[in-house]
Image (cartoon, rainbow, N blue to C red; front, side, top):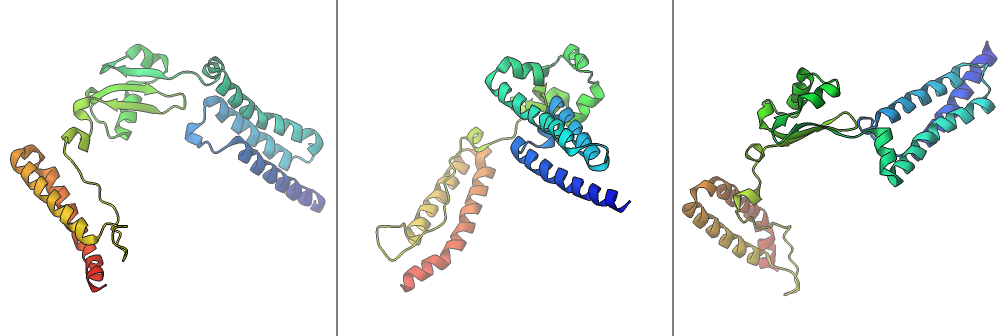
Length: 235
């Protein structure tokens, strides 16, 4: 009983060390990014490792090669997939388009054994509650759904507003004139920016909210830079 217990501990420690090095060699792929084939191989490796640890009838000399072969298989397949796109498509499969140009492709959804309830659930998980808002969606090889919203439903970015936003960097001030921009010069520039934002807000009311936010950020930065300006004046 005691020898068997000690042997199980030794075998388990050896297997844990072996699995540690195997995972280092295989890379840092997240579980959600694994293909179906890689997922099955991972389960098989775990089953082999557990059997070697617990079954004293299995000799390490004959069991470890099987573990190494199964562990090397994903690495070999990955290298071949990088070199041969057709091989990658055969092993990992291809992405399936579910929604194209805002139109639901029911045939492809059915082909992937996806129900409408499952598709709607995946969209809700991405905070999309209206399928009509989707321009393009496809089922990736890892089982995740990628979604592109219609242009009118996409979040607004500064490029869409066509509103200039000045870059705000950390203030730098030194005693060597000409090498760094002084805090006073930065304050003068920010004052000009605020004037430009106020003028733009008056000329284009649709941008008034964005300009108000920019002015508020500049005012916050102005308060932060005041201590630096005070130090410069003292020096």
